[in-house]
Amino acid sequence: MIFQSDELCFESCRMNKALFHKLCNLLTIHGNLKSTRHSSVEELVGTFLHILTHNQKTRVMKRQMRRSTEMVSHNFHLVLNVVLRLHTLLFKNQRSIPKNSTDDRWKWFKNYLGALDETYIKGHMPADDIPRYRSRKNEITTNVLGVCTPDILFILGQYYLCDAGYTNGEGFLAPYRGQRYHLSE
Image (cartoon, rainbow, N blue to C red; front, side, top):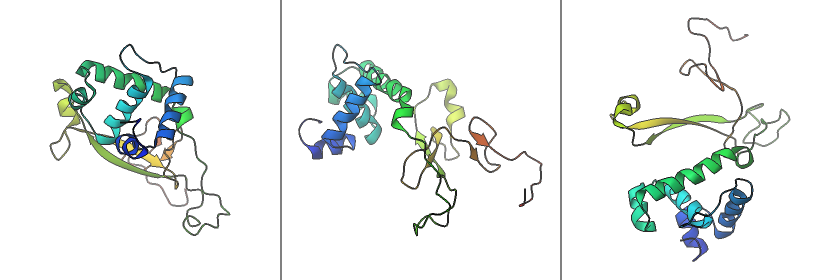
């Protein structure tokens, strides 16, 4: 999938061959990702990206990669753990829109850092956990929040002022329930 052409690599992993190899090198050098006995680093990263970009199940990848379901799952989690460890390298903190911005698209959003949105992602949970993940549409999902900059880059490591629909927690500052706030405050 990866070595044949840029088009096939992009179709499979959503990046061209040069960028794919750059990512593999980054994960190898900085994340200490190593080839396993049966899989090269390129195969590990390619499988990981293919599962993410195409919402593939491990049993489908099992047939495609000619590996056991356990091996596909283990390799996926191996790469996922490296990516999570390198989040400070892979995701960068952004600056807000400057007060003197002259860009017609963003000059109205002074000090704006990003936009918060959510999406539901379908998943498979252990039977005991299914009631916690059942959505109002009776699907088994988890809610994922993401904050992006105007350049469509994810933002990490910030605190977000949010409305009463959210709870106070790590990174979120919601108003206290029952407290009336005035605009000047």
